[in-house]
Amino acid sequence: GAVVSQHPSWVICKSGTSVKIECRSLDFQATTMFWYRQFPKQSLMLMATSNEGSKATYEQGVEKDKFLINHASLTLSTLTVTSAHPEDSSFYICSARDPSREGQPQHFGDGTRLSIL
Amino acid sequence: DQQVKQNSPSLSVQEGRISILNCDYTNSMFDYFLWYKKYPAEGPTFLISISSIKDKNEDGRFTVFLNKSAKHLSLHIVPSQPGDSAVYFCANTDKLIFGTGTRLQVFP
Image 1 (cartoon, rainbow over the protein chains, first blue to last red):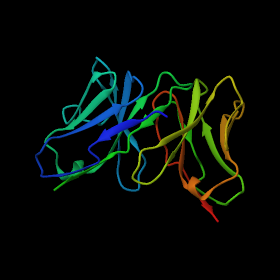
Image 2: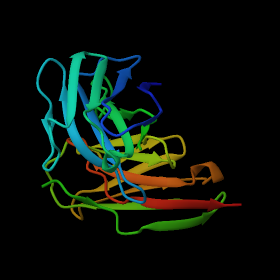
Image 3: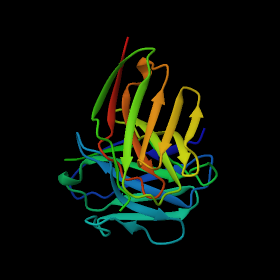
Image 4: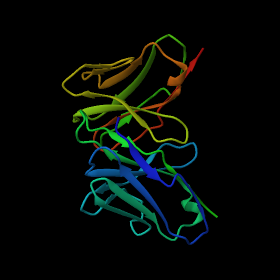
């Protein structure tokens, strides 16, 4: 089946560090990828939609200068959390839309747990 | 605003019996609805979709029913297995706006 790889799975770093998370679709081309975050005991919250070759579309309340998204190829999108602070600690999940399947479902990575000290 | 809502936060079913998960929506403009399941600390896994032109779609133990007049869809799992214990979400095909889902627990 379709696979989306997200890396790294766990990051612990100091406050002020910038952290890059990669999301790859391994067996299909994804023109659209999505980035979510999840706080403890809460649902997934869509942060932004990443479109290959164009600027990402951010949801209301998400700082585009804080969360930089790059979708340079049909199989790779990256999320960079710039100058991360403890309040950015969360579980980040990416997904990629598979255009070849009925319903164009999104397939999700296993997430990245980010802990800022 | 394409809103989907799952009104039952949890469901407990005995192994081998049928699990029925429900979802209501408010906007009739959609192409597909999708069902996902999610284990803790993992990304959601796509289960099954249903097109707006159908009223039923079946894939193995999973069947999704669509009632357009009631703006309601349901996911049937039969027979239920302990490994089905997870949180289930319904979503449309535009943006996947997740609600709180329904936590299914299948006990032996």
